[in-house]
Image (cartoon, rainbow, N blue to C red; front, side, top):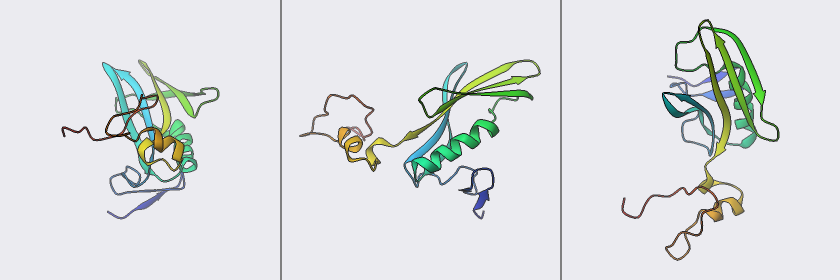
Length: 139
């Protein structure tokens, strides 16, 4: 399938509908509870933080859950001081909530201080104050 432009975001989509799968370091995710806590990737492979923020803002108004819900009303709340939104969708019979946010692949960050924190030091991991992104030694 040919690549197409998503007019709402100004971003390229691959034929699968998932943006730029694994090409960049930024993603847009939805987090919600549906019998268990779930994280769903909405956009993958975004090259820059600005591109991820544009996709996040568009998703706040267009994202629909995989559940069958007939949307009657949508409310979007911004978390103060964060790059995240709470989306509340009121359906005919139920209400559904999710948090939309962006995330960066830490080990590939262009910020040397962030990437350095996840590096191993003499074969032993440093005290982890941030998430670790690595392949376990026994793999």
